[in-house]
Amino acid sequence: MVSTDNTLNPLQNFTSEDFQNPLKVSNALAPFIAKHSNTWKFIEENTFGSKDELLKSKKQFIDVLLRIISEEGEWKKWKNDSALNQCFLVLRLLCRESLGSEKVYSEDSMKILLLHATMLPTQTFVDSQNQLEVLKCVANILLQSADCRAKVLSVLTESTTKIQSQLPASPPSMANSVMVVNEVLKLMFNLLTAEQNDGSVGLMGIVPKTESPKEWNEREGYKEILASTLQIYLNFENVVDKNPLATPISHCIHTLMNYPVKNYTTLFFGSDSNQPNLGVLEKSLSILKSTIDIAFNKTEAKLSASSSESTIHVGNGDDEDETALVGGQRIDDVLPPLIIFLKNLAKDDMRSRIYIRDVLMPKDIDRTKALDSGSALPNRMIKMMTSISLNTLKETVSELIFTLCDEDASKLIQYVGYGNCAGFLFQRGLLPQNTPTTSSSGMPATMGSMSTSDKRQINPITGEYVPDREEESEWDKMTEEEKEREAERLFVLFEKLNKTGVIKVGMPDKDSK
Image 1 (tube, one colour):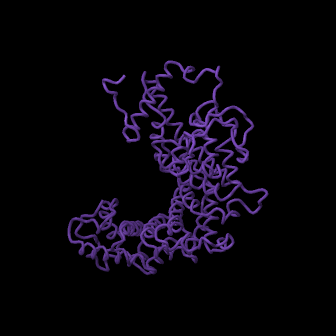
Image 2 (tube, rainbow, N blue to C red):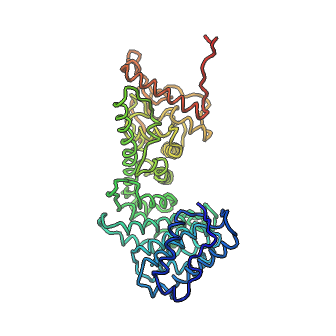
């Protein structure tokens, strides 16, 4: 949405006396908030009125707001906190657009905002609605300005410990505290990923990648951020809405996935290499399983109910993918960061790789049926590797499984089957020149925990056991209703492939034989 106002400053005609009255300020700001809560561009995309006038008006408006919230501003004489909260809200809306917001990016303005957020080193942490709104405002500013990210960085490292210590032990009373923690974790993510945007500041931006792990650990601030984030991640349970990836857990994952694990192994796993602390791995895999179960169990229940109500049900696995939701969001939108974090753990730490591999790629996986069928976690992970609907998960899960196979294409094929990983290997340019032949052992000995003593023949395309000749085929085992359902599933799959252009299905010529 863009603004269509001639002026953006409802306070432009206020006198000094008016600013002493918080009710007048509140009444003037309320219509602006109601009209522009969804406005993202006030100047750049405005098609109504003079852009120069709008720019001038916006700058004047920001000047007034900064004057009100300044250290010795009018707000100190107010007894109405809601008016001050509205000032922060309006400033946040205006700062969604960098044009005209330059004054907010100054060092003095940032100090004012951090003062109200009680994030300065000399302040005592205060958990309030005003602080929450200020943190949201700061988060918007950090997205716009690399300079501000640099100014906030040193302050943020200390505030995380204070915020972590403020987490109540009882979940029902945590509402406002959790919201504040969410905003601070967003700030962390912005700071840690700054290098990806402009290379100016942030974990990867100011720390040369050639430095040793010891030098990384000695970097002021980053170690403290990680320690506080891990505390929140390990100790917070989303028991209220039963969404394993609800905030602040999701924000913790966004921060953790940006840390190089090998440089902080002591914080991730403890100092005892003989008995490492596996809490991070256990928590992450627990969240993974719970999230996938919640998403797909609900979907399967709906499809089952739909099937029982109708004599004919057209659907397939990708119908499940499209409707797989967690907390009202598509699983393809919320789960990939956790998959990336698990991949980072497996890539940088061999102990983690073996632990995750044992859970996601067990050597006793059921090969008597298709590996992408069933409700077990390993089966659902393999299924996501070939999903048509879950594009992001298809990529991230394939990367994770490939990492667990020591990034060896032959090991990947031998475990999941050529058909389940061919698309991924093609994208990576790792497809073998020759189609794999039937193997008589489950896994090569080099896979360690993945090796198996089972000598049954394995189909290299599907990863299933090759049935004995006298054994009845899967198709013959099906009832007529199951055969009809399978035919419908294949029909829908071909329709989807036809629409996406992967293949073109047409009717045969009349003269065809």
